Image 1 (spheres, rainbow, N blue to C red):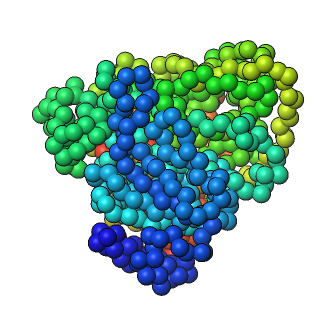
Image 2: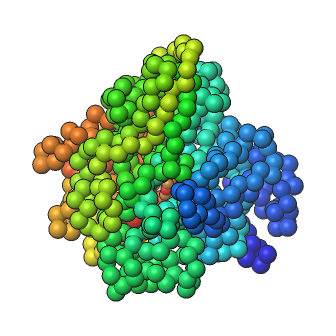
Length: 551
Ligand code: C2O
Ligand code: CU
């Protein structure tokens, strides 16, 4: 109770700083009322508990995980959907315009906070690591859903521990619907599938192995990871205690990112999914820490893409494969009627040139290198009759981006991943909890062009890796991509798989690539993050704040 009270007080002072009307409304409320769910001014109220647990995902010992358990305190029954059989958190469903309240309860043995990935919310609702709460504490989120219909998600964001916590199982989907989407009559109900794809290393005792350490929840000194940190390939000297101390963390192994050789879907080992011989809407999230996917049907049936990070595209696109970096989403329209009854289509990841991680040289413990091919989700097409389905040729109103409206249209801001002594950075600077430079300061109500440049400047030993660049608090547009000639060969194995025409919050930037994006900073002043979503890069400093300043 004391902790909760403290958190609420702190949150309220943060709210005072941003002083919106909603903030003032919250201020009048006695702290005690907060936990009861008795308020009438929200459409949905959910309690989300982050806690250790055990799930049976492989025959034998249950796997110790950390996961989210949701409880619907108010709202339509459909607002919270449990995904059975794995560790994945619930699917939260909201309609555009709804007022949502979510109480995060931290039942983990370390601090945490939740970020609503892709949602456009005020700074103190965004899950910045500065708002991380201690074990036993509660953080109250309340916001209006302003986003377009789309597949968003949530995951932890405590500084230096995001990779570890997501790996332990903390993640869930946040699906938004709106009227424009409803008018399309896209497949729903049993014809709407979600696939959250994650890779893990799993030991002989069925426990997750993160950076060569012990699994979550294993009894040991100091809880998760306690006592077993020395077991990794880097040896006890470098690994020992780093994680628990909250400092450098997983060192070299984590520098390059953690890759697993077991592919899980929705927090479980994928089993064959029987589908009717008709159209389905398939929402796919790459929830992996570092692994990039090259999604395709193994029989090379083209993919019909209808949505990306920020919802539906203007029109469907055909792709032979789709690149999906960590945290990116894609929505597919899949007509299983185009396979005969009894067919067993396999969604897979094809081979591509994964850059430096391909060799597995730098600390990855997995035999499955980045860019190696693997199966993901097998389907089985049920016996007919096939139901004919058609897809609208226009999905949503998205106008062409207008970069000339950006205040720095002539001089895009450059942001380059850089690597120093065992830490990552952006333009040479590592994460600074409350800091943002002048260069990282933007004016509320303006648009800017940013360029992510990944040419290995300032990298260690000339290593260049892909990065998955994410900007908090908004959806952006992709303006252009180009690749330097030195990397052009590798690039051909991925470049036909980008889905760049819609709204995005995360973008894959390949080795040698420059990607220009157009951002609009609206509604919410304050301090927001931008970072690489390869979580070990993020945890080791490939993350910075940007500050939206109100005029
Ligand atoms: Cu999904 Cu800052 O992250
Ligand atoms: Cu990165």
